[in-house]
Image (cartoon, rainbow, N blue to C red; front, side, top):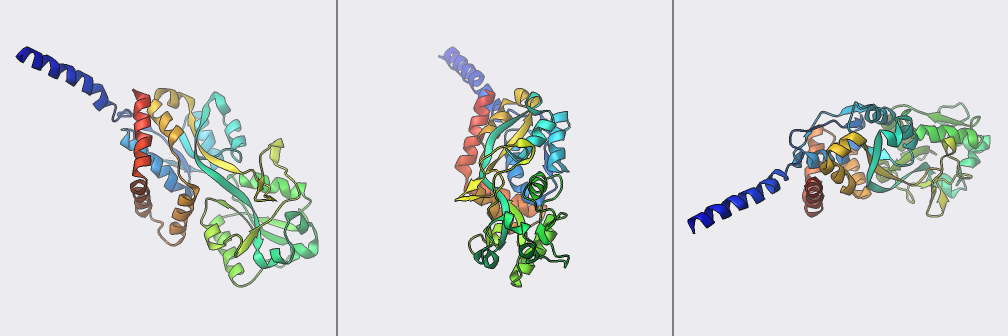
Length: 328
């Protein structure tokens, strides 16, 4: 009986050891993320970092660059993954940085992302419903904020990808003589736009979801999406651009994770995590609104991450279970 007991204990120990080791399949591996230096994208990235750490990985301090440079960093091996890749909008960045030979788009972390042009509701209700109408100098002048007679479009920061679409469409729709594309620090530009709308002035701007702006200027209440004359994207790109009966001009999109092929092959647990992790777009917009309301320190954002995980614990634990199983 003693012999049987010892043998059984040894067998159980041998059986249990791989399972225990598999709780942290990333032990000893350092993961190198790259992100935009854009605080509203930190939340979803840090949810992934927490999951990677729970799997045993060490997450290096993220490099902070523009979206275009982020793809180059992954493609050239200076980073292992980029967590906020817009599947259609950033595809040119993906291809230019080495494409599928170097990287893979993994999973779909966020679905239903929108982009487009909006005007104040008064202007929309007065009949300005399509971006192409701004080709008329008299209509464009209604959105003139600096006195030069042209419409002022609060636009997109160079390097984000949206500026390529806007610049292409200004030419395609014959708007170069009547519309100024104002680029710079987006939050400063949009803050001025929000202030002018609050003062009852006409406004014209570009934005996207998930983002807090659509909580400050609510479509259907404060502002309305404009249609565009027809679908025309840079470099012959294609995509579904219609949303609720309007052609927004930008492809309806999803946010994915781009990771190096060699990293994915060597780290099946991380690969599976990237495949299964999802966050509701409304959760991201709500967190972005907290940032806009002043909850914008790094520690507070970590608190947002912890609160989201606690509220979605079963789902989050399911990610980890799937990742551990993939590493077995």
